[in-house]
Length: 296
Image (tube, rainbow, N blue to C red; front, side, top):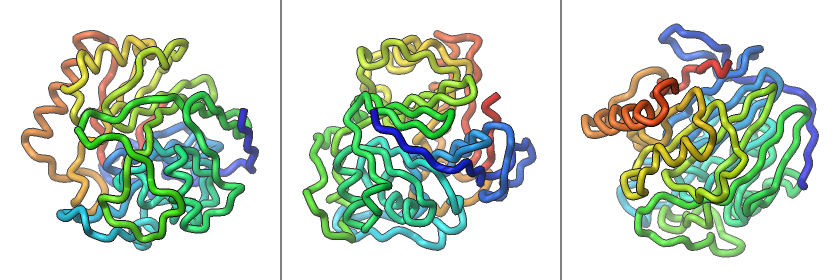
């Protein structure tokens, strides 16, 4: 088992229910999850900060040959100065492009597939901040436990290929290949959170997981038979489900409401109905950008 121990830090925004965005670098005591857009989230346990697929550059990619560079200003505005861990589901650009820069900014360990780690290494992230996973590996940070779970990407028909060894950055959009997919179990303070960054899973990999909070990718789920109910049953019918990976990811990030297409809004409503059909007591939340959601 991989282990990493770091000092206790707490640097994400305070929890609240007002429509204004919380300052992303303030301390908070109560555990919160904050949506960073696309498939990105920040978990503040009150002691540690964990970032999931953080991608705030939101590059307007209309050509797969476009060369992609992280937006340093957006990273400085929306990402905390300190974090313990960055977990990455796979190495498509809308999940991993900003990860090396964020690792440099925060000092966090990058936990992901070999392709993800190759990208971080190519950006000169120190080896002590790199942890390769293929499923089953765990990291420990005081009372925080994070385990990687082998998974599948949503069925987009692109095939699963790794990032070429020793990549030379910057890369074109097309060169950010999947490189296998992971999901994550996160346990802290009596909570169990399950993170799904793309809409697919391997059911037999979920045995023994009982999550009370699930972050669930919604896009393209219709290509997986009975995706929503099978997933919820497999992870123990969580009491809170947060919709994930649904927004207009080429629009610049800003707090609060962002414009969603009518078909996206309808799909989110359908997702909530699917959850309630098989788990009537489960609360479904479509997050607002950059607004902390209490985990308790």
